[in-house]
Length: 107
Image 1 (cartoon, rainbow, N blue to C red):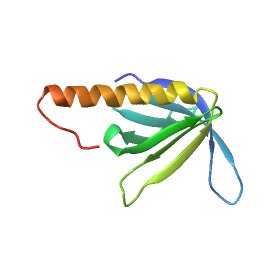
Image 2: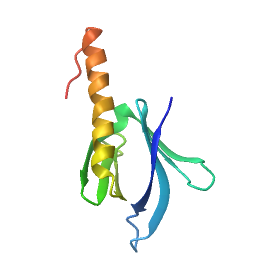
Image 3: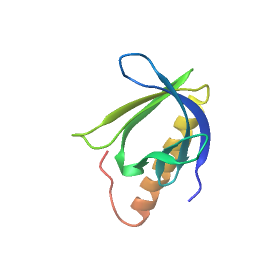
Image 4: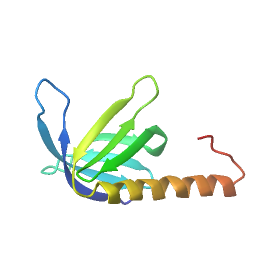
């Protein structure tokens, strides 16, 4: 599957606000984080693992994993709204496909 990727800076919640540059890719299958130099996948989340997401004028945020092991991410980017809209479009498409197939997805 094809990912639409954008370079972002992750604000890592450690003792310091260490910033990590990476590529964040969004496709119909989920979200990936890649090393921008080696293109190695650092983290991968399926659509079903994305619990919530949103944006601000200078950031894209999302929570992924399971209810028991969720991880929160915040990325510094001016493309937060576009990333949010792309992710929402993929999720809406999945819901429509499931409804056509006769399934109902609980929100």
